[in-house]
Length: 431
Image 1 (cartoon, one colour):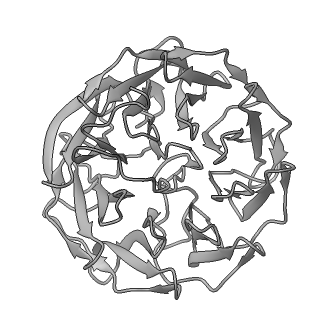
Image 2 (cartoon, one colour):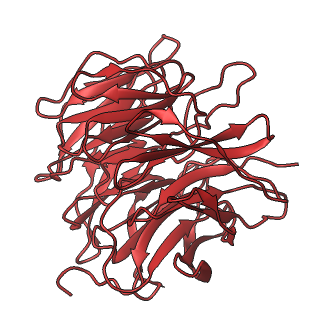
């Protein structure tokens, strides 16, 4: 029997312009319909391919209260390299814009929300571990608050922002020195973070004050990165779960329990909510910034960013979603009821039509928890986190974009939940 392993792990692009609680999704399902798991995490924004050396996939696994396993895979040869151990319990992973360093935040056992290394009830030290992609070696761990919830890196690669769930803090880390700056205090617990492409503002998702309504409240707190100060929170409605920022930085789109709320970043004001059906869970934005795509009970709903209006839903499932760097194809995972297994569906952005689902099969079962696409856009990697008693290793499943052919699964650590791409010969800028 397949057992779903509950996750709250996140992977983010270097800029953090796309962020959410996890790769797994959020919301509840209508009766009879498999739904996303708590905490949505949209796919990382594509960035230029790292220069020099083979491209490596870094895959974050989540064995509970054990050494966090970061698997490394050479995407050219399909061979797994020696894994890296970084902390205990895992929460998120990001990579610098130059592809030279991966940062892993750890300290929470995400299977049940309890601390792995306790410093008090339900609290744990947040340890951020840098990994040099050139060597696969870890640097000195950095202490950053308690119970990390998410991370984002400024587009210039100078600062990592770490959200601490237990302490209502966001801790900046200087990449060059590996030292923390004065923490930024929030009015409430943060759960996810995104940074505008110009690096001037970070947006942190929070639950908002208690409310008697069925969906509660939700707020987004802007942070001015020049001074590391929190600004007035923005009310967005109940249970915000994910945020994506357009490439021009003009608009941030926030997924709530019932709608998509656009925020004008110039004034930090929320616009009229956009109806996309029930249970909006994941979002990606095309590289040209013209269209946002949101998964919901209706399928995949396109939103025109010029008018903030929803278009005709595209019939597809509502699993993890990603878009190719050229903006031509969206891949969305889901469950193929006819085949009784998971599948991934390619969607043409030019026509907003779904192609033939790519059916996935494995003797051990399939449970797609996330999607990553290589910087050159040639390959899609599906994170198969099927979980069995005894910590059955997970796999990543390659798909060739040109043909949509499924390759041989590659063994990685238990519960793969996030993926980023770096180079084996990357060096920090100026090094």
